[in-house]
Image (cartoon, one colour):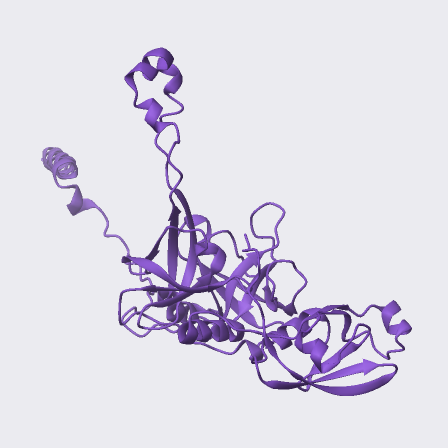
Length: 391
């Protein structure tokens, strides 16, 4: 009796296990989600994008955001001269004799395209750029940061500083805020905005490497801001801004052996650019002071020869006959020390100081002559236009 009961219980247990395994097998195949262990919840911390974004320390995003809408891309084109033999190419008899040889001759000329950058300086559509960007252009088109494109016309140019003012027919444009380049110091952070190599609007960061750079042979009047912010072809005419997004210079040139940036870029100070711009707006061109002298820098040898205490100033090497300098009594061998109380450091600074004088007004020059210093009054003349146009 006990053996029979034991056998019966064992049979019931075996059947129950078999049925349970069968249920698990079927459930595993048809309802896997019921048997899988729930995944453990992972909590990830996310920045709240709904709150106002605060720039990270060391970021210049606010400066870039402020200035970028005022920087435009400039596209220029120059029409290529038509093939002078085109009338012969259209002659059936001419084509019959020369046939396939005409293929290279009859390709239509394509416009010569180039590009640069510019800075919107007024809401009424005035744009400041480099003269070399637009000097040879037959057509000028600008592209705003929002994608709009407009035709532009030249208002006036100043090849001596490589500046030009162009205008588009539009209102309420995002004009840049001017700063003063006179407040810049070596080591200040600056950003260069432009369209390098035509890739699109780009911002690069660097510092002011030097101020008052001249004797570079780039322009007639040179007083460049040197920066290591990357400036490449296409950046010409773009904005150099300070860490607050205000304009301090117009990017103009680079020193390069390869055609790309080597960490030496030059920008025209905004103080000079503004003077040129305002003269173009008011009178259509730029008027500069002139006294009619030829000058050279003071070397240590010249300083010793003229018994000067410092190698500073500008030696008058020649005086143009009947010029303001000639009429004022200046002569070769005089050393120009000051112009209207401003110190002359070399011939480059002398040229800039004289150019800033207003024609037909009186100025006082401080000179050294025969180991004495003299104050010489002079009536400033107007700088004559160059006889040969600059390339």
